Length: 531
Image (cartoon, rainbow, N blue to C red; front, side, top):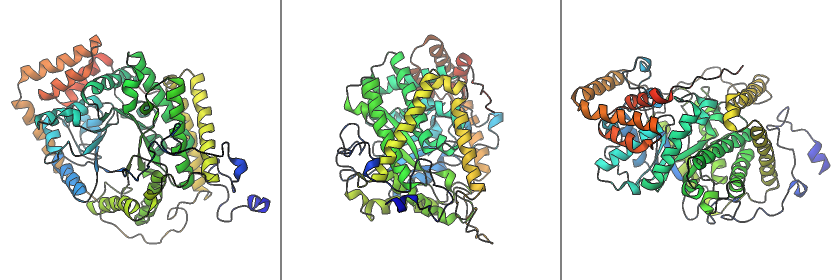
């Protein structure tokens, strides 16, 4: 055993992760028994039957051009077996700008679908029964408006909105840290988020009101430990904000959800999910004194790692995605998106999206992995790595608490700097070939084979702007102006914003107009530069 542990691995110059050892034994385990699935602290999963009772939701993140083009992709994915929709919005929509805003020029429909009004939202979901599909919307600063649009479309279709299921990302803290599509200062953004919590508790009991996201921090370069620590720290901040707003923890906590990355280091990723689940259970039960067991359960969506996809030899990204998806499944995810192999080049083609979906289906129906609940439990390596990630993540949480909480840590640039340092170290390892990226720094090809890529028709932007201007010309000015003024007044008074926003979208107010009403009251956030 001693020789095995001391012998350096021949395939690399240093271990792939600072937390991993060459050999694990029973001596590395803190506790000999990880317990049972479905039992607190849920190390082995939140469901006692794992996937034997129900498979994870198979989502494919999609959105491009205008609502019609995206609707075609959703219908294609549903026809090929996806079990949940995941909507990508373009940057103007994410930033609260209408498609004819001067800063939106050239960005309309480029990285997601352009949504300006209730008419766009109707076109986006035309022919799709909203009671039979779970919809996830990746939207943050304008989450309140897009959620209101979704509800308004459901009402127009005669749907009982209490039966709607899905998730709105609604996680603005990670925008200040790693992504940048923020609008309002943090305190005002938190107020909007807790308004969504309170309103959805009454109106949308099956809706996940937030998806607290580590994914984007990992894409920005964080380590697995940082992803867990900073995600949970954001979660703690949201819980405290909701409590400060007068909500009861067991009224909103069961509808909190999380969103993690699935990266390449297979065993570390499995352990990461287990550690996050165990830590959140302790935070909610011990720190926040939640009584409802569902308040203790960390439910999460996973997306495979876009940052690991390579433009070189793009077809081998299928292998990377498969490995990452398997880690997510063995880690107990409730929902999964698999990236398409061509996403380092462009938005995915239909063929690439179909292959990504088929990857999940092969895992679900051919691999046999779902047949046994948490099959890696008891592995010396997995259990020891789970302990290590928990310990290292807790050290970060303690540091953040000492700084005065996550808002203070973000304002000081601490979190951003930690991620930047990790990203720099990783890039140095790649540049020095200490970390191998197949096709990039080893095993290259002299001539790369081209693959077909998705291209967005430039006419779609012009058409979107023309539709928006036509809507403005024919709507009842008195109604929409009064509705937007009511949003502004609610922002000033402290009244819950959601009923006013819902009324405004029903009266044909646009995303940009409603966002601007809140800008007048809340102002805009100016980022502190981290050097």
